[in-house]
Length: 359
Image (cartoon, rainbow, N blue to C red):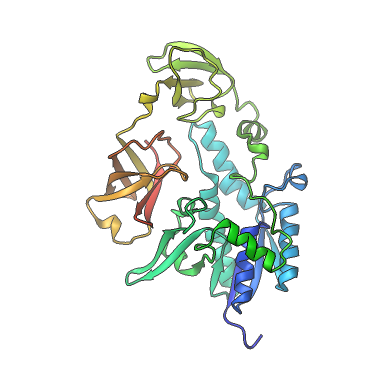
């Protein structure tokens, strides 16, 4: 122990990525503590392998910790996760807004509460298995996209503050998924072949509507499908089953393909139109977070903007406003722009900032 480096805490979800992050820290000689958060419980968890932070996943994290011979603790964050993430997910969908629970989890649970716990344990950093990179510059720590663009998770970390970033460590940023699994095999980790978790851990089988109806009975009340001039052309089984940009599930025969362009929960209406109706020239943001501390002070910036994690992004002008707001003027077609989603700004590979689309 006397020859070891500083103490670090690794957030271990029970998957291969966070397990390899822990293994790399042990390999480099750090004094490693593994922490796993129990975030939720459901009857589907024990038989599923595409979840995280519940049931079998906690057991898997414990097995990895035993293999690496590091202490491992499970923290019960179920109530916090419900109030901060699941309730936000439910309320957003019911309000006709499309949320991103993974960003909320990072923002309100992992990089706030868990980070504080790591500090209380005397750790020098909190280590996670996210595929992103960080670099030191003369102006502080910068967050960059992963080397493997197919695994890059920077979009989901836009709400990370500069102070948090200085305390975080992302050892997988230069690895591909194949390389990560090979490292897991090299260390004999029992999760080396475990499938990746799904996007939203607490949504069984990806059925958002069913989960919402369990959380809020009668949330899926039927209503009308209408054109932009409010002409009724069909019926739906609940606004919660749709999001802006969606084409599938409308089941309305029409002379041209129709897409969801707006949701009106108050009137129980799903507003549809042609693909051209999805094209937006601008968007307004709230709760903007700048990871370049000088960017928010500019009158106007020219950056690449993503409104979905898997999109290449489009060039845009960004005009910061007071009270952490901003206006985006798109210089290309970003695709469907939905309230509740995130717009994230990049300069090359660097994540400069991002905010929540409100209009």
